[in-house]
Length: 220
Image (cartoon, rainbow, N blue to C red; front, side, top):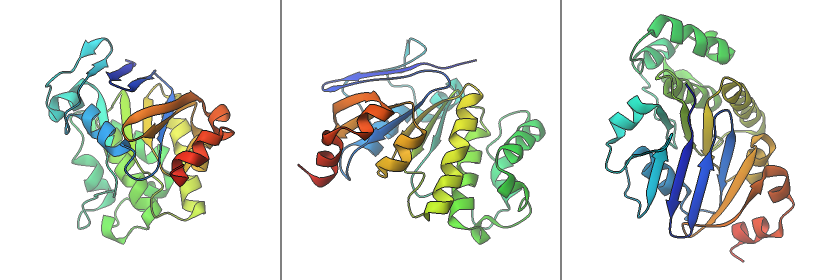
């Protein structure tokens, strides 16, 4: 099944469709993480959040996950003393063997280190593991918070390249990212946030050339 996300609040109107990669851009404090946490149910939002036309209201995070929302928070948060395989299996609700095989196919770097402890992985491998763990729940909508944070350019490219594969399977992806160049290179559309409000939106290619993007990051 596919997903359609719609969010409406004062100064903010956002949508994400199935198989689409949408990025939230903005400097620190722009409200990107807060918005993702609100969609997942960890924060209150003075507005409406709808998944496939169903308003989520006060639906708790665990029920939103069961409705098809996966969340990969900033900072990776893997279980360092568990193996890669164990980190993935612990998140599965059903079809664990099949789902595990799918994730290891999507992330070959994890397949090569399936028996390694998560704490021994590189930063990029840990980010892939965090994304894979979120995907183990078979989400129709995947929320990603700063997936390139702390990664080298090479590892960032490796992580970002997987997003296209994820979206190609029909998953909707909403990503908060401070590295605008990396995000816009992979996204279909983008929203530029400032103080919790959307100040620009449009196709990623258009926002890449918009002077408002530079102003937002420089505080102009």
